[in-house]
Length: 129
Image (cartoon, helix red, strand yellow):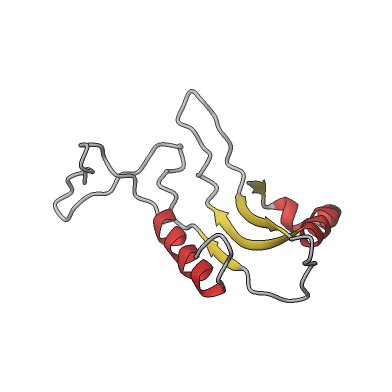
């Protein structure tokens, strides 16, 4: 997990060069700025971050010039601007609970994970057979 500025700033180009040289970038998932916020009195951070999924190049491989990378952006991380969780509700406004009776957080990360699984299968990643 890195602050998005590390991916975009010209002063951190050396980080990107190092990553491309040492590992295949499998996926980049941008997270909403509320992801790491915590409710008061705790603070957390409102920094926009991205999750970077890497696989170190094998000894007989090297950096490829061009290859597909899974990209996604979470629009709904299940927290409001105060860092409090947002829970799923049914059509009547009642909270939806899991089999253990716990409220289900309303986020889109499951859909992003499912998209990555499909991508991994299509790309025939060695860890996903």
